[in-house]
Image 1: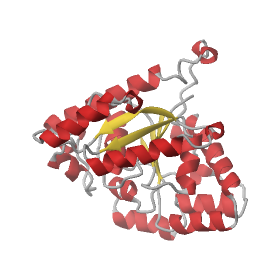
Image 2: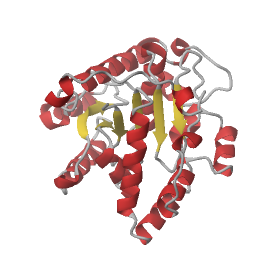
Image 3: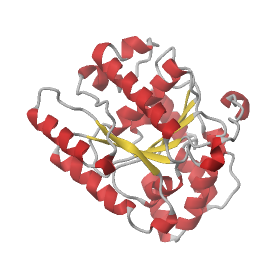
Image 4: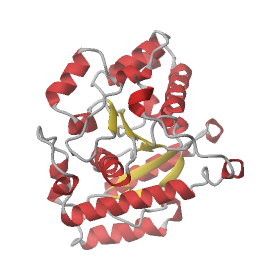
Length: 300
């Protein structure tokens, strides 16, 4: 089953974590999908968008984050049960009850240093491959929030995930980030790489001629495979990043044109997953769909 998506741009500040959040909650609320969000960014942005800061801090203090999972599996070479690190009942959207989270911690940066110091890159990649192989069978969609830059952990996600999506702003610096990513992707092709699902133009100022010009320029490059639906810069989407201690409906969190744009983007993402090269491989064409798995039962 090909359903793991690394969300990545080498340039920061492109709204990557907010896109991961909105896609996860829309896939859950509107499409009934069981979604796992893997927060692989040391800033833990999407983790703090899906739960209270105090809850996240407790998980970090209790050693229940991606850092602790990777520390045991990679640095200590211990058999580690991934379900123990998955948090259920995240999100403040009352109709998005099927979003799950593997939370992050700022110590992730230190872990990556240790991996490099001990030359454990192959083991790190093997652990990432094993984790993705397991969660693919349990969840309908796996979204991996990668940090900006090209760390050893990000490279492992990009080489082991099925697909990658690249959010970008319609400006010069963000577009340069895409070019750096494209050049990196071309290195060592024999090591494998995620299939490009496309570039998402995010935080677009609909009244800006400059944004419109950069958007057109991105679309002219077929390699970008741009999503038709751009995500406009709107206060509603910025406010969605603030976790509320009370539950709210999906339509309250993503109202009006902002919600319509996110839902259209999610529909397009699902269509691209269905029509991807991996899904269309002849050896998979006649394969039966895997039986639906209840994440709660799988992690019990």
